[in-house]
Image (cartoon, rainbow, N blue to C red; front, side, top):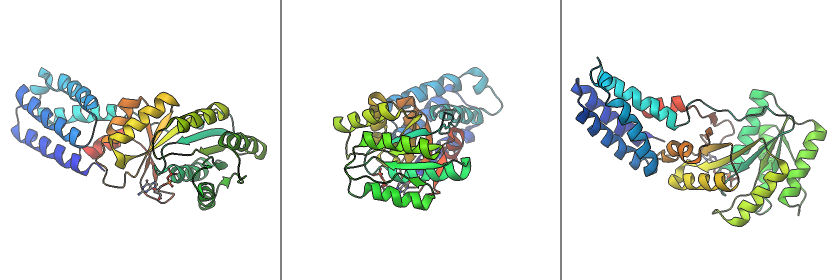
Length: 296
Ligand code: GDP
């Protein structure tokens, strides 16, 4: 992810550095190219506009242009605003609530929900020393519940025994009850996805949410789907309410627009990055590190 964007921005800033003294016109020209690079990375236009005008306001100030190293100062301003756009400080998935803490995973089919649920369970077990129960609420896709059971074994965490024919809300209730009785710290509820956003899906997710009262509701979104991922996130935020986002397939050649625009469009932080199919390929999203990576 971000290879093209990094390459493009690198060229813009190299040109800026070679100029030495800068005029307002130089900065404006550079920002025009930054704008094009962001649009090509599939960042939504309103997000790009806000970003460019915020950077511009600070970067054409006299203290920048008359400074000793104006190009470096402009680059630093871009870096700082990029970090802000990505959410500022890293935000972890929060387990700070009375046990069993419910974490609900939502998203479209194929986004990586089941894989991310198992990755997260493994991380809670290893890093946070938590007892974790995984429960699949996907009663539609054949073998979805068995898939989660297999992943739970790999992650060495518990999985809710499957009761065929049970409805999602009832599964969530049973998971919470069993978790309380058997002393689990965390329950991860892997909800069903659909191929597209639809009302039935949203109603079901909302019904599970009101019953299980999850401490976190995490949208799993595929970075490869670019602006679609952002639209999906906005819809889930409006209809269900989210506390965070897990962006998957960042190991692929996604242009990065989803990562860049998610926070501004939804108001919710990206908390996790899925970087492969294996269960240990999950990372906390660090806005500052990502901004540094983008700027090379
Ligand atoms: P779900 O339908 O949302 O539950 O999606 P799955 O968890 O079943 O994932 C769909 C496919 O994407 C599987 O083949 C996963 O191995 C793969 N996958 C999930 N997350 C990632 C990721 O971060 N990177 C890559 N490369 N593949 C992933």
